[in-house]
Image 1 (tube, rainbow, N blue to C red):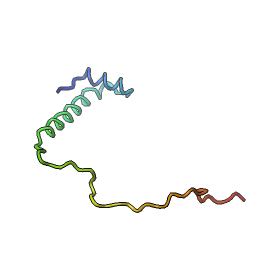
Image 2: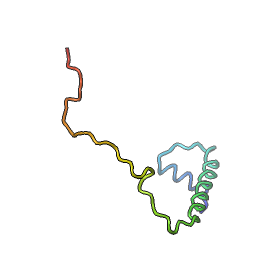
Image 3: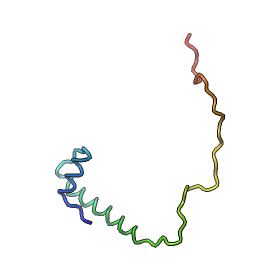
Image 4: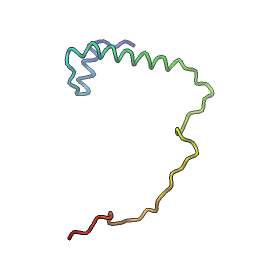
Length: 77
């Protein structure tokens, strides 16, 4: 998929971004590079790889007691 300058202008308008005209061509190049990287990722063989549910497995955070407090704010003098 190739992104041209017309598409960049349309996406910028839809996203309500102010994109100066001198940035349109470089932005098209950057977006095309991102799309090429995504296409490269789609070629990776992930058959048999279990999906990760967390980057840190088996770690649980301590839970605190759920108690309503006054927020521990100092009383007004």
